[in-house]
Amino acid sequence: MEFFPVYQLFDIMPVQGRGCYLYTEDGQRYLDFYGGHGVISIGHSHPRWISALVEQAQSLPFYSNSVRNPLHEPLLEAMARVSGMTHYQLFLCNSGAEANENALKLASFHTGKRRVLAFEGGFHGRTSAAIQVTDLCQAKAPLNSGIEVTFLPLNDIGLVVAQLRKGDVAAVIIEGIQGIGGVQVPAKAFLQELSAACRQYGAVLILDEVQSGFGRSGQFFAFGHAAIEPNLVTMAKGMGNGFPVGGVLVHPDFEARPGLLGTTFGGNHMALAVVTAVLEVIEQEQLISHAAQIGQYLINELRIMRGVRSVRGRGLMIGIELESEAAPVRRDLLFTHRIFTGSAAPANVLRLLPPLSAGLAEAHYFLDSLQQVLTSKKVYS
Image (cartoon, rainbow, N blue to C red):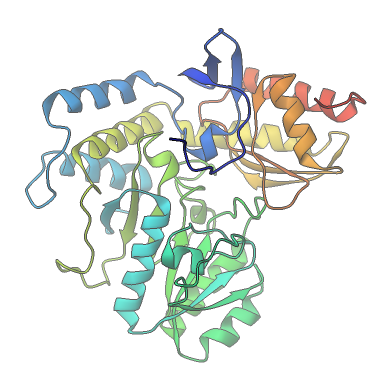
């Protein structure tokens, strides 16, 4: 038997992780500036994260969410305190795509409508409804056709309002920062006008913070830079620091009754313990302000680097638009300098999603290595 292929594999096998670094079986150390698709938020194998997993596994790893759970209250308190979204309700699931599926369903329940506005360059997942509102993924099966979706250019509020005026829009879904789209940042004014227009025309505003949430942008959620209040917020990735978990924050204006949403594994005991630990580490180690500081330093330095056309992003979610193809640069960073970085849909964009704990030493090593690669004439192997 073989595994069904998902990604093209690099011939590297990490067996251990510590902080911002991965280690192979032969002891080679790699700087992780990609965080496994932006999943690693507080660092690999953080002691608080490990203890939360072990202690919960030794007591009660799982039981049905149809019974009371003593872990609910600590998680809700931590989430309210760190995010500031004290009046929202929380639904837990297992992934970002599943979070977006449930958010779209809630929007349709709430409005009685089925049309969705999404944005060019957006990515929201590969499951049935999520892939319909995703612009970049072409793996749409014939059965993925239950939603009427209109894709619009990012940051053009006039086109959005023209669609909302038709009165048949259930939801507008937008990433806090587009990730796979090349780290495209919605303009602050655009998000504010979008929020106001959704309220005016009765559409639900869904903020997809699956990749940009949990402190990555230098705010707990990236929409915090625009100081808006979405109807629904979806999240995953850095939420569990490697443990599979996703969630939806639901505005209190929405009807909440048993039967609208359901899940077997979502909100299980292990997930609750882990997410609470992640929130506590983010708070105690001040990782949000740290991400803002280190991220701004990286952005400033990258903007004056030879071979770099432009730099986009906030905090430790950074897109580097190169003057050349990104793939050979990414390979050379990996195999010569032992640095993991990410790609994006635009072929010349290098994507950075390091752990929020990455410091100046890691930033300096990355910058020095990237400059060497960009000025090198060597043949890639």
